[in-house]
Image (cartoon, rainbow, N blue to C red; front, side, top):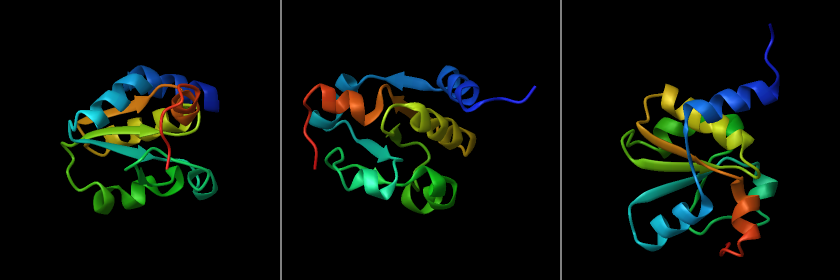
Length: 119
């Protein structure tokens, strides 16, 4: 049976670690050496993003991962606008050999709802 987008996202969420916006913010504030990767489209990025995040749109993640994220053991948190693309991106990075990857639950929407800072 063919899988829908929703099926693929649900599967990716089950197979990847999910972290809260609070956990991400605390890791950034404490200097824990976390890399935040924003997989939204360029026009979304231009409307605001997490300070210090790397922008690698989902559509080019596989192509740019090795050059933009050379340390496959680095702590990486990916996010999108609401969580679906982020979950798919986290699963992809795991499949590419990245060992410490998580998806931020709720994406940037959840970050904004909490009133956290944006660039």
